[in-house]
Length: 122
Image (cartoon, rainbow, N blue to C red):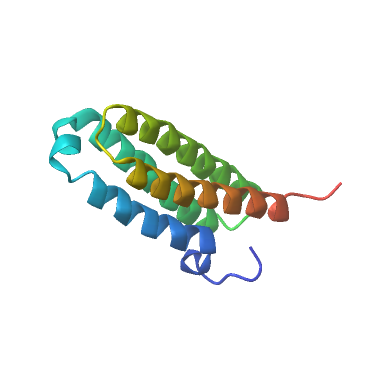
């Protein structure tokens, strides 16, 4: 964690925050809003990304932080899967889908790099 003084400085958290806002904006469409369960679930999974980065950072050990980064990465995968369903059900456009997939994939890659950086070297 060394060089960061707060989780707000972490690039993947910053991007997850932007991603959360986009998820909230897109799920407010009338079509998406009718599917209460998917709407809630995709929002929860999205929020889980940034929340787990923050929570892991505050644990103050690399081992615990790595665990929470893996949870955040799993939540990113969950959102990706839900975006496919939203596209298939025509709740989002192909353009919105591509934008969101690109954002969440970037976050996932950043998390992978961070996990690798924090992991003990053999």
